[in-house]
Image (cartoon, rainbow, N blue to C red; front, side):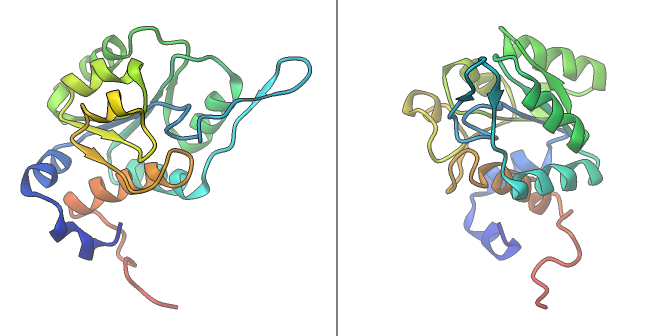
Length: 181
């Protein structure tokens, strides 16, 4: 999201985004398009959007912690998360409890947490954190609990929109923002 678009967002949303110190992301349907690719032996593959990855790296560089919290297992999320420097939690049955544990470890409050997710397991953290974000294709029951919904769908740059919101609201957008080649 270009910084010029920040003025179009309401003050409450920008204030929420300015407080964030931990950004948590669901994986399937948020960092991916939600489709599961299984080979004949049951091994899964996932596709991640490279711009989302760049946004997550920028968050880390800006001092915002990043975590993947997913109810599913699988090595793809672990590999991608570690590649990007994120903490990764797979097979999580209670996402809110995991977020609270992260807050305790970091010495921050739930108000300083953004959580991005797309379906019912993400609703409990949505209700508790300072900024709940849903991708454009989130299930309606979940999106109803979000403070903000991206224009892009999960796996198609939605996480980058969320990252850009956080960076822009905190005045931490890269110096080359808006530069032309």
